[in-house]
Length: 122
Image 1 (tube, rainbow, N blue to C red):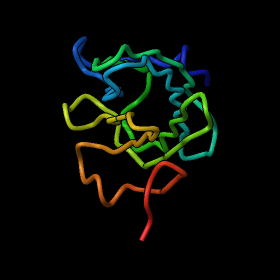
Image 2 (cartoon, one colour):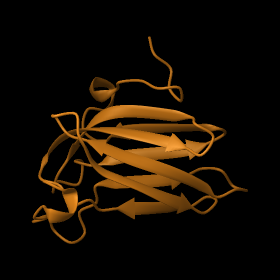
Image 3 (tube, rainbow, N blue to C red):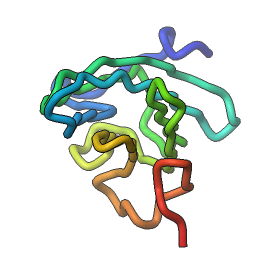
């Protein structure tokens, strides 16, 4: 089923991803890809965020845990398992600045990391 065909029953103010650009001088374009448990891409969206600004994204997805991959135009990337749903903490948090990009979640961020070139792994 295509993501655009799915029923979205979440409250209107429920965000799927929150993207913040910490770079004070340059806008950043971030591509956010959401992959389901069947390893299929269900959403891919690019957003350009102004310097020192943030943007909220809302995806038409059923409540669940998804792999969220993020990539800057220069290829810097990161990924994490993120719950996406109607609760405020069920959203991917994407941050970029100083040449890196990271994705975490408000719900158990350290337990959901999968790594990428923009993150450190132990």
